[in-house]
Image (cartoon, rainbow, N blue to C red):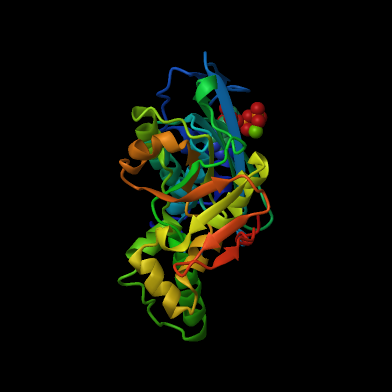
Length: 345
Ligand code: ADP
Ligand code: MG
């Protein structure tokens, strides 16, 4: 599990408090909104702005598989999935808390690996680790991260603000994380069947990274602010485009038209989808864990929004809430379903 295979110190050697000191010792706080970090009964935070709070729990065997997920990547990803939710409110993440339940299968070095990924995400996204909890578990690892962010009240974007004729936009490309997971699962089962077979992952680095080391779209939130665009509604794409569109439509009381050929899909995603006999559009619609942003903007912002690199307009919002459709290149309409992607949440 740890990169440092030689040294495996049992957690009991340090005890709970020693372990907490070890893992939090090299974090320092950077944000003015963080008044007191780790080390007391509670952290102190404060801001003149509104604050947003979100939390996610990741459980071994349900949300991740340590056979092909390095602990450092897992730590990184567990922070990113929460920051992505903060950005999806058009807010800026400032603090996180991290709680872990660990079994005796894990050594101190493993927990350090996990926290090196957590620290990397904190440094890159300018977020402070301000607390958490540490406990033991009978089997496996559970990680729960809570993220706190700030936003001006008039800039906060909910799922409920989409209006007729708004443009529907997505960032990046979709379906990659799902195809990366299919590849990892396939190589894992081949490895289980034929001992010693080396995994064939070459040429698929992009989709593997989409699965193992996703990023949150901080850059897009900054670009939208620079362009003085406030989306009318927004959500992050954790369960697939289709399911997220349903959330926006349901909360806004609208329908939507999206165009199949506009949905951004990376070449490696399409290639892998074809290998698995999956339609790449289906991977984009129903695959999960891309952590891109889906948002709607007023049509007057068209010129500004198409000039932001990484943003694609894929359709528009319509009034009839029973009309949620995908339009194919030959103009057939297919009803969208909230299939989502079952990753145990
Ligand atoms: P308490 O007994 O009040 O729950 P703890 O001994 O659990 O306190 O925690 C001591 C300090 O360390 C607190 O500031 C807490 O937020 C922090 N902490 C505990 N576990 C973690 C962890 N896994 N990651 C980050 N901070 C932690
Ligand atoms: Mg505690």
